[in-house]
Amino acid sequence: MSQIGIIIEREFNERVRKKSFIITTLLMPLLVVALMVAPSLVMIFATGDTRHVAVIDHSGVIAPSLESGSEVVFEPTDLSVDDARKNLTDIFGVLEIGPDILSNPNDVKLYTNTSSSMLVEDNIRSQIADIIEREKLKKYDIHNLPEILKEVETTVSIQTFRNDGEGDSEAQSSVISTGIGFVLGMVLYMFLIIYGGMVMQSVIEEKNSRVLEVMVSSVKPFDMMMGKILGVAAVAAVQVLIWGVLICGVSALAMPALIPSDIMQNVEAMQQGTLNMAQTDMDMDMLRAIGTATDFGYLATIFVWLLLFIIGGYLLYSALFAAIGSSVDSVQDAQQLQTPVMMPIIFSIIIMMTILNDPNSTLAVWCSYIPFTSPVVMMARIPSGVPVWQIVVSLAILYATFVAAVWFAAKIYRVGIFMYGKKPSFKELWKWVRYKY
Image (cartoon, rainbow, N blue to C red; front, side, top):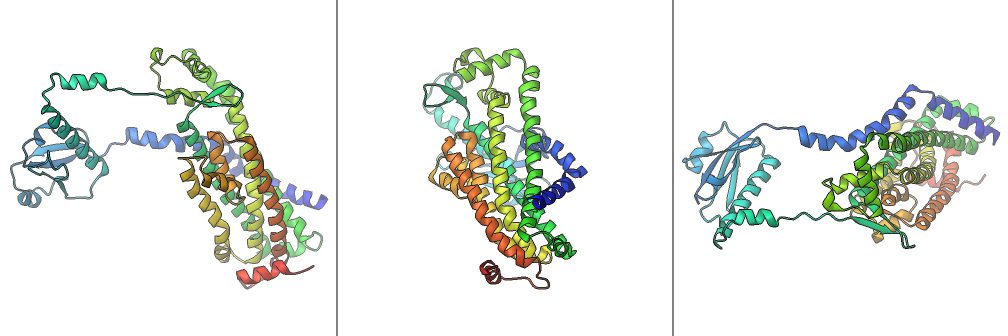
């Protein structure tokens, strides 16, 4: 154990003392927030060029009601379709509306002079649909129809609570849970890829420099591999702990002081189920987001599970990455052997996308127990509410599989570190595993 401890200390100090580690640790929470906020900001502030569209309306009903805006400017024309397409090449395109548009709403054609735009097509489609609906409603001869429709228009907001089985309940939001689950799943994905690849790269570099040949004269190959894996695992654990302290500290101390007291009162009332929606004009999703961001206990629990799954997933995959690194001479040679290890990680991301719609589906539950997919899948499910026993079982299987993976990887590692000049096949790797010592 003293030899393993020396290797752990060396691997830990080598990475933690780098400026890149400090910068990444401090900036990663800000980067995650930026990635969540950036798409919304782009949608709000991004403005494209104004498109001019010539309108040829054979029905005479649609063109007078089309409304131009910053995205699309509609310009009625008396030209025929062929002449318009030949002569009006300096505008975005030509819109042709059929004579029986009211009975055949699909009789619409758009001829563009450049690549089409989804925003333009949606604008045209929605406006024509609204105009056709209004024209059809006119047949019923209802007085003040627009005012009536505006008056009866209703938006329903649901306050969702999760029962804890003891008569109590807590407020929750599927939107917030889905967003948090997606972020946590992506964090696990990045950690497994980055830190697993870090171990493989380190083994390849030390093997090429013949450092391993010197070290194995005084350290067993198994101890050397375990020291390297656990050393990098300690780096990952420290990084997650720092993030947890920063985020939980901000949620517990800074945010309640910055948010106005009346908003915090609404948040507390929502969490207790006593919020009167008629007396507040705040969006429910906004209240739920603030409630989640200021719930210290909830965030602390999330980070505890995150730490356990990051360590377990890393230990499992880093053992396999270390075995791959020891059996090749370069990163390029590792690509073929790396594919079977990478596939479960990529598959877990694909499964995570489907889980966000139904976190308690049969596929989600089973993939939460399979150790090669459970770190990403389970962390994506936890914010939606998962029984503790399922999380414990998943962790137990994950760490037990790590022990088996270490035994498997050590067999390859102790042979691979002495092999040079040849990239082994999967058949040869299996022979290495079966060697007896």
